[in-house]
Image 1: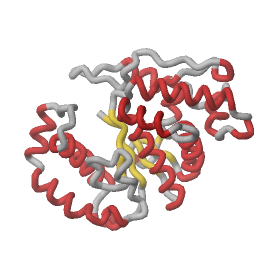
Image 2: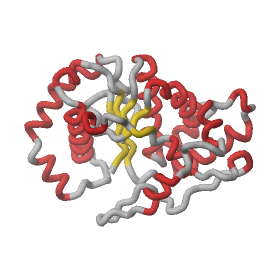
Image 3: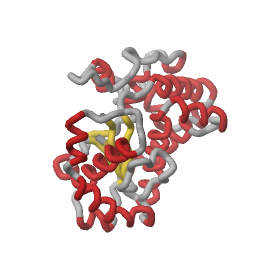
Image 4: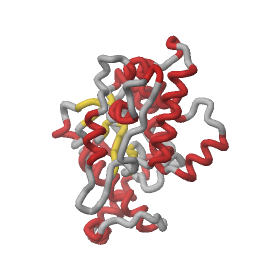
Length: 253
């Protein structure tokens, strides 16, 4: 299970294939990489059979996506890019690991405690506003879910509570904020949510502060070794940067 995202840029691939098709290629290439690189997360039997039956499709996607590295929407391959043959796609694998959630809580709290309001990203102001749309309810529901296969969306069964200026918030509110907004064209794209162009700059500023600002090289190395989600959210940050430059949106589901 994963949260999938894409920079919707009108490239040569999108001229020939639908958004749904490219998304399916993204899943296929990711699963193929899992099988061929020794990843310790073993796909379910039905997914293994899916890949076995998809040899011709894998060959096709590998031939077609050779154009991706030269595309302005291509995300950095060194940032959670393993298995992302379609260069403008990325994913955050579930369950969200406890290490990343603790890091996220610490960084949001630090920003609220140490930055003057005028220096805080706009999304922080919205997050702590009593009328904020990010009420945490959607994430709270996901946190309760365990699939028949025993999979979960979050390692932590309870969210982390914030304090002081964020006394009424938990990490459920933060993950709601990071889930984007409902998309009106989900039937066409298969992505049910989006980060519209008008929001990409705000999301870039927020994630840049939380994920990178004053994070030492030692701490970043430690995070990469303990949390795969850290690199995946860095890839989402790169998606916001590309989308802003290209004046487009980021699709998410």
